[in-house]
Image 1 (cartoon, rainbow, N blue to C red):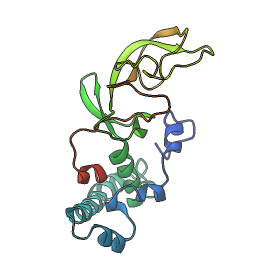
Image 2 (image 1 turned 90 degrees about the vertical axis):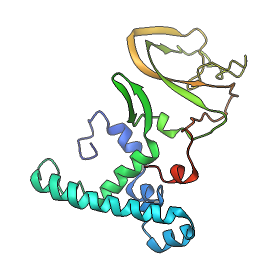
Image 3 (image 1 turned 180 degrees about the vertical axis):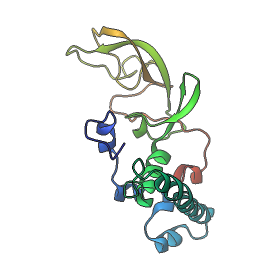
Image 4 (image 1 turned 90 degrees about the horizontal axis):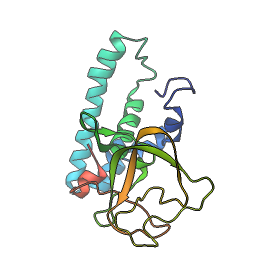
Length: 205
């Protein structure tokens, strides 16, 4: 999708994602300076994990991307657009932003705008649910802080409640973020990524 025209459905989202250079800083296995990686991770199991992850990415690019896709279908998979650098970028975006969501047919990992910005917290966490309902608009009304005034532990979190909100349009599927506890105005909303160790959080698969 990155190589498609600006009118692509996903273009606005892709344009908002970090650049290649910014993505390289997200995961230790993608740090461009191998010496820095070894110095920072020396004495921890993360060093071997990072180097194994980098080797796996290189092998996948050589054997599958370049060796199969680009070689057999160069028009659909031009080598310049499917370089190892671009594979690293795509891996960083997926590993650092994908969220597991319940979809029709079963749970899958997805990239969802805004949800991919939510940090992890084992304490003040929120859940994400797929709902079918008419979308709401505020019509200029003042939004309430989610759960702040009444201390409602089950209140909607992402956009908050809206005074005088009006249902418009047909029912459409959309994701709703709901807090597990009261949230004060301006407080960060977080998701619970699950029971993960530091290695899994810093270097997700």
